[in-house]
Length: 270
Image 1: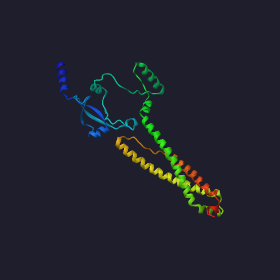
Image 2: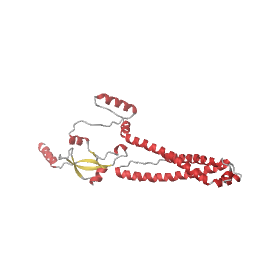
Image 3: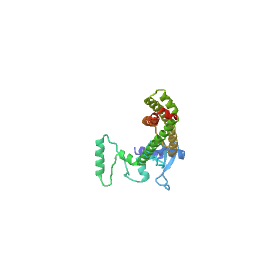
Image 4: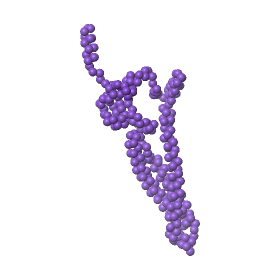
């Protein structure tokens, strides 16, 4: 029995130790030209001998805004292997806990915070808000630009309609002399302005889709992420169409009021 045990130990010692596996980030794989099955050496410091491992998987980063600014490569190893490489012992900087309910989350936060001095538990939603502050500022900035653009476009639309209606002074005068009422002329001008506004909003939506696709293609290639930087949603399209229609109706009504209140002969220059 003793001889058999010694023989088994010798055979086990002679068998080569299979290297451990790791998972690397897609960015690192593209930059270094690595693929699944390649052997690499990882170490805690550049001057250390390190440990030979096999790339077992290549991961792709999720569409998380908080990870956009993180350009450093990411490597995932087993916990025991990480402790061996770093010599960190049974310590962690941070960890995540999954709870089954909201009440369980409150209880876990309270117990972790009361466990010892220096521990601090946070909800994942709070961390997401903190890491997305920059994007919230950018969103507010874009909203302000949007409001300014809408106001400027409304003034521009009103000026164009005023000029167009002024050019049709003789046509309006002829319609009035033919017996058309002021209300009918006003409806005609407003309807025409509404059609022009809807056509303009449709063209704007098409341009928005094209610009959004170009923005996503460029920044996704720069940051190598599946995150959508620009999104045209049905809500945005509906809001743009309704806003354009409202602005067209208001601008057309204001422009037509100047003509329908003027006597027809005055419009003809008599």
